[in-house]
Image (cartoon, rainbow, N blue to C red; front, side, top):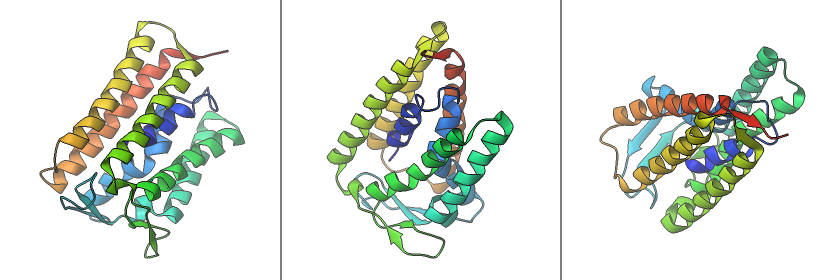
Length: 218
């Protein structure tokens, strides 16, 4: 799941209109933002294995700290608490951000083969949607299209940046998704870490910039 996670970030905007889209993205993608850092540190492992599933050539050997249900629950509480403390937001925002963090595990269980741990060292789940390329693309694309409509209706552009920045953000994420599908296996684990880290930072930055130029609909 890739743009499906971003879809939930877009779709959460009506529920949290004062929260930046960048923060909503961070919450929905927190597992994947932490993952390359943990791989680089040697705490988690991934292996390039073409044919592992129809959709991805990656074998997620071990990622208990970024992707287990228990750890994501703790990360969800930490992110939610940090945000509401810094921004003086209410409990509603805490629960929205926490739910977005945990949604990552739910969506990944739907798509992955059984490699999603309940807790470090615990049993692993996965329903294997990635074994069907066509079904994966259809579901994620539908989620993404619906979420863009929800975000566009929940906000309005303040200026040209708000209008065209949103278009650019949506197009870049869609293009990244297509590239991930047709681009073939990555050359190395190092490339995965570098692209994942830089790509995540750039996406969050663009979301922050774009959302600042859009206002919640009254």
